[in-house]
Length: 134
Image (cartoon, rainbow, N blue to C red; front, side, top):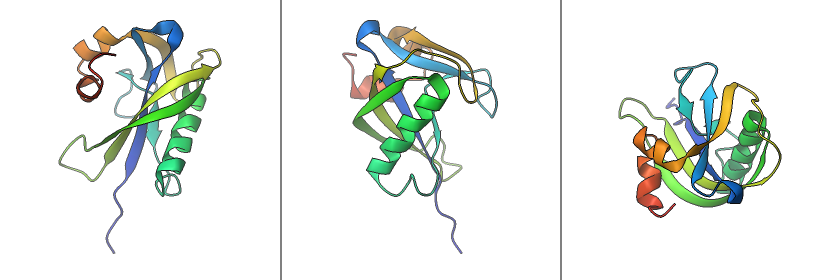
């Protein structure tokens, strides 16, 4: 029996009060422990079924990780981080709706990061190609 490809969903979270910034988190564990990332994570089988459930899964993951409510606005596409596996990353642009930042599930740090810093860190190459003016 062939195994189904796994996937994750991640959001570039923007906020009107932090116009030149993007939401960044530092993960507590896993292969990215201690590294700056964007909120999101693995999808359950049910969340992978449709784009609506992927969006809802992302909203829930961001809330659990950062304490804020977001709207999911634009689907940026799917990328495969390495050729060595069948893991796909679905990227979305999100906007903060409400709430205060707090370290939540699996997160040791959450903060607004200057977009320039994210680009220099090499984390947002895909994002900068899709949205060069952000």
